[in-house]
Image (cartoon, rainbow, N blue to C red):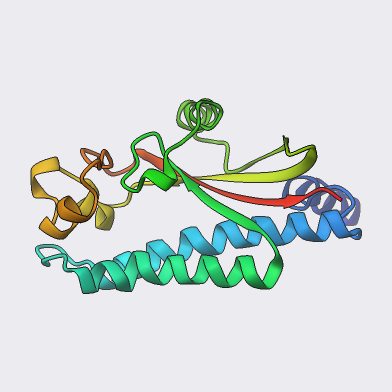
Length: 184
């Protein structure tokens, strides 16, 4: 029985914690996973608390949900030295437009819903960058701003004239959070 428990913990650690968790890269990887999970959970919790059925979505609501998440992202980046990016094939803010490579990753997440996150290494300006990507799925509360195109709040239409982040349904892949840091 004890051997089974030890083996179970070992297997869980392989899938939960990156290799070499005791070294600096391993610690950064663990932090990156936690940061992505925190951001997604924070958005979900705030949306559920501030967006109720038949509630008018105002700029204040937007600030309480998306603005608060953006503020937290900035705090994590400053504190932990990560670069954090949101990417989507159907973006609202042009800054979050997925690159062709990111679209391929998003398609993989959409086809394989059992993938909860994915690591890779990308090269930028001659530096190797560790990148953790975690999918974001649409929840009921998201539909107030990301549901039907004609039901978006007017301030969204005015602020984001090139918006394509609408016509989602609950459970659709909305995009992903990427948490990155230099490998060395």
